Image (cartoon, rainbow, N blue to C red; front, side, top):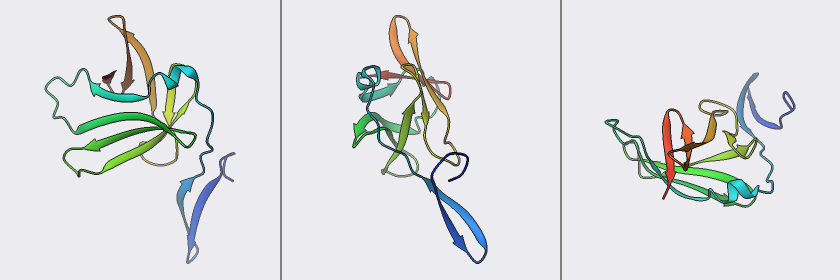
Length: 123
């Protein structure tokens, strides 16, 4: 355990490497249940579309956000979302890109998810 978190550490020749964190499944609040589905980036503008597909789904007690990156590969990347409230969730885990926040906003009367400057609208 490190800082109250259960982590997996690889030890080799006196060196330690943080490999992962145990995320416990949990019940999903109704507000997040309604957000399960496919999403589009609403404000892409002139940016190059790095992400082809964005989906939020609930599987085995974990809320997941999945995306496929058009430039890097056709594989799907999955990240666990940990809701903090009905309007905020963080990308669970340790390491680069983890701990970032996804916020729920109302824009022009519609609910969108805000992440890294982009607005995600449910299809």
